[in-house]
Each structure stands twice: as C-alpha cells, then as structure tokens.
Length: 239
Image 1 (spheres, helix red, strand yellow):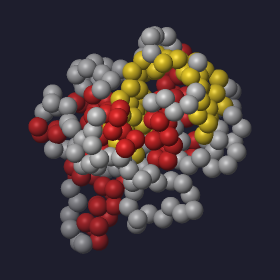
Image 2 (cartoon, rainbow, N blue to C red):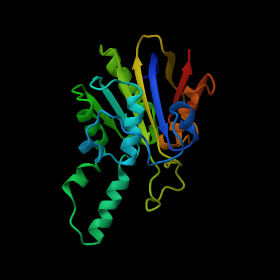
Image 3 (tube, one colour):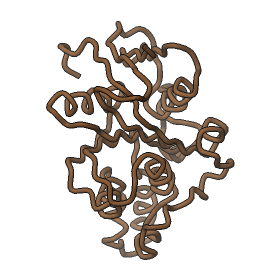
C-alpha cells in the first residue's frame, strides 16, 4: 500500500459473519457446517445452484448487512478465492475430460463478486483484491479511499476457505483452518462502532488473510480495544 497512508478514522455501521467453526457461531447463529450456509431466499433457484460453499458463506454474511436490491460500492478481498474449483478443473483436464465454460467462469478470482452484482442488482463500483502478505489491511485502505472521495458507505467483504493439501503452504501462514466470511458497512460517520486504522512497523509474521480474519472477527466481538497484525503492518483500534 502507499507509504503515505498513516492513520484513518471511520465507523463500522453494521457487520455480519459466517464461519464453519466457533468463531462465527455467536455472531451468525450458525452451527459448525462448512457446506450449509443458508442462501438468501430472494436469490433465484437457478443462481442458487451456481453458488459454491464459499459463495454461500459470503452471501450469508452480506445478507446480514444489506437489503435485497440495495446497491453499495463494494470491496471484496480473498487470499485464495475459488482456487478449489481451479484444482477440480485441473483434475478434469488430467482425466482427459472436457472443461465446462461455466465451471471456468465460476473459478476466477472475481466470480463471487460477479454473482453478488447479479443477485443484488448492484451497479456500483466493485473492487476485488488478492492482498497477499498485506492481508486484510488493503481492503480497508481501498474502502477508505472511496469514502474520502465522497461515497457515503462502502461494503467490505473478506472471505476465505481452507485450500487443498495439493498446494504447498509451509512454512508460510497462508491457510486458515475453516471457512470464514465477514461483511462490513463502513462510513466516515454514523452510529456504529468508531474505529481507527493505522500503519505500524512490520515485525514478525502475522499470517495472511485466512489466518487474520478469524482474529479480526474476535476483535469485533469484543476481544480487546486494539488488534495488531505486525506482519502486514496494520493496527485497528476502537476509539
């Protein structure tokens, strides 16, 4: 991210989370089941069938923040996206079978964002990020940039699922233990939770987004007044 970014205050007006482990149970009311996130009822049956387990988790979290048909500028952030679908396509090729164009379109990094734009009829700006070592911080920086340009609210969606053992991750902290999706409505003012995002010196390894996301959810649920992810160089504070 640009070195000029140092500190920014904002308000978390609303948020929703779905997780396939205990991190999400209290906040989302869901039980531990990675494939059973409820799909919002207004989504047509044809489109529901196109939603992967990860997409279902994302839609479940988003549905707790916005109304059907409500359009907000949106920032999606995922370290791995639908990489599991990409692996399945590789297996299909290896087996000598023909690839489905629809399967390919649903495996790209912005696939879930595209499905969201259709389901919610969202014609606002949508950004999709793969943040790497900066983890969850860049999505907030992107949203804050939109807010400072005059947008009233921005929806930020962070999501990831465990990746298959086929992909080597050791010794890096790249992989989460369970599926987690977090949706947040951010604004510069409002009656929500006032927060401050600031840069801190990078020191150590905090893990990438799949590792940080459950820790950030715990922070929102009351886990302390501040959370530092030194590896990415970010700090969030409740003010």
